[in-house]
Amino acid sequence: MRDYRGTVKQSDNQKPFRVLLVDDEEIHRTLEKEVLDGPRYLVSEACNGDEALVRLREQEFDVVLLDKRMPGMDGDELCRRIRGELGLDLLPVIMVTGTNAREELLKSMHAGANDFIRKPYNPLELIARTENFAGYKRLTDQLEDAETLLFALARMVEARDEHTGDHCSRLAHTSVVIGEALGLGKEELTALRRGGVLHDIGKLGIPDSILLKNGPLSDEEWVIMRQHTIIGAELLQGLKSMELTLPVVRSHHERWDGGGYPDGLKGEQIPLLARIFQFADIYDALGNERPYKKAFSDEKILAILEEETAKGWRDPELMDVFRDILQNRPEDLRMPASAGADMGTEIFENILRTGALTWSDDGAR
Image (cartoon, rainbow, N blue to C red; front, top):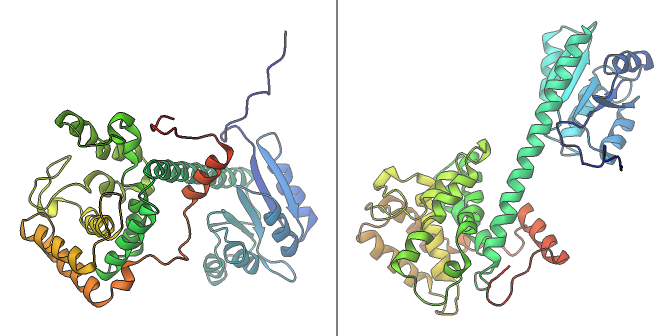
C-alpha cells in the first residue's frame, strides 16, 4: 500500500519556526543554536549586519535574535535598516544584550526592537520569547492572508458588473477625502479606505438570478438583496483589524431618518464612517456614466444631495462638509490616475489570467 505520510502540506502551525541568529561571535551563535535545537526550529545564521540583510532579502523569517554590540553595523543600526530599508515592520526582532543601561535599551527600542534578552540568559527564557514572538508573526501573517482574500473576493463582486469600472477604488479615495476634512485619525481613514473596497462583499451570498437580474426586483427579491449588508458584516466578524470597517459594510444603506436597512438605525445611531461612506457612494454613482444615464455635473449632484438631506435622508452636518469640498476643491474628490491597486486587485487579476474564474454571458460561474 502506498505511504501517504508527508504528502499533505503542513499547516503554518506545524511548520518549524524560522529563526535568524545575528552575532559576530560564533560561540554565541552556537550556544543559541544548541538551545533552539530540534525539529521545532529552522535556524539560520549571520555573522554581521550585511550578511543578515542579504539573508532577510532572500528568505522569510519568523523572528530575529540580534546581538546589540557588533563591530561595523551594530544591532541598533541593523534593526533600523530592517524596518526602513527592508520594510519589515512586523518581523519580530529580539535584541540580545549584556547591558542593563536604561538609555541603551531605550535606544534599541527606538531603533525598532520588540524585546530584549539579557546575557547571561536562561535557556527556557530564550525558548519562550522566541516561540512567543514567532507565533505572533505567524498569526499576523494568517490575518494578512485573510484580509487579502477578502479584498480579492470584493474585487470579484465588482467585476461582475462591467459598468462600474474602478468603483471600489474611487469610493475608497472619496471617503478618505471626506474623512480628512473631518480631521479623522489614521485608523479611521484606513477603515474608510477598506470600506470602499469591502462595502458590497456580502453580495457574494446573493444568488446571481437576483444580483444580475435585468429589470426591477420584486419585493421578495429585495428582501434577499438587502441581506448583503448582514452577510458582509458576518464575513468581517472576528477580524480585529476590521473592527472599524465592519460598521461601514453593515450600515452603509441606513438612512438619517431611520428608513434604511438592515437595522433601521436613525441619526447618530448610524456609525460615522458609514455616514461618510454614503456621501462618497452617492457622489460616485451620480458622477460616473452608466448604461442607463450620463454622468451628472457636480452642480446636479449637489442639488440631489441637498434634496435628500432636506428630506431627512442624510446627515446635515456631513452635508455641510461635503458641500464645502465639492464647491471649493472638487478636484480632491477625483481619484488620481496614479493611485495604486490594493493587494486584492493583484490577486484577482492573477486569478483571471489563469482562467480559474470566469463568467458566462448569463453571469454563471
